[in-house]
Length: 289
Image 1: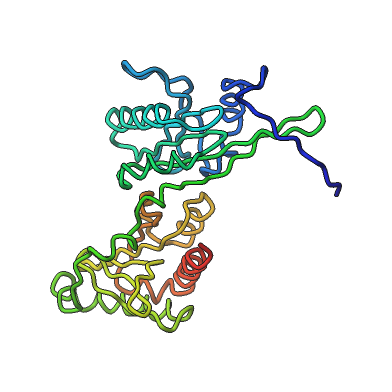
Image 2: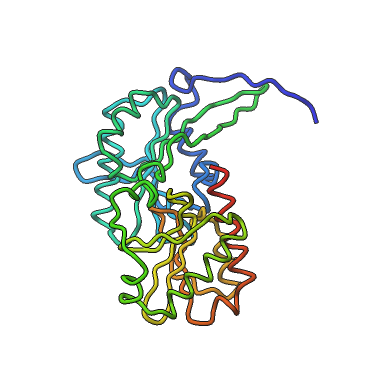
């Protein structure tokens, strides 16, 4: 294997490598953005009274769309607003999808983060920094996510304003039998961290360690089943693994990066090995952040 030096190019000042050229390269292979298994739904999509959306991508497996805007050079306020405007138009036209705004630029500036902070995490936005590298007569594009929409607010971040309850509250809301299932999941999780405890919040049961949230899994007990929600990155192979293992995967919560899995009474015993693998993977992902 030989080492090669790359020359970094400025797309903004380049005479041949235009924004349309970048758009075409992404359209040829949208997976290079790192958004998962996505396909191109539309290019240069006309927006009512608002110009054209560079790319509309759709997840091949999940009910999710990405409104993608490309900018050569550094991000600026007008382009940020345009990206958000296109996202807003599309989500209102097609509310059946989970929509995410994506801005791609050569330079994601500190001013960009200052502007985004004004929205207080209310807009799901991904920022991707793009670099063009040349070696000989060949040119490649490298895309690096510098702001993922998970940064805009997860269950853990909202923990301080969650109303804390107790076990009696959940036994009344669900049943003792489904609460026992939460206990079983805790015991599995404790294989990876013995200091974990259940934390009873108003809308879900989470995990904590030394009083601090550690929600790589959360549990929502019902009367006859529980909704088990491991926090995992969405991936086709993960979805296939869960479904092929016989787990009842309801859907994927992209806002909080959680698979929603229905477990009926007795399912944990039947699927203990698989569930242990799922919890282990969620624990490893959160530990590596």
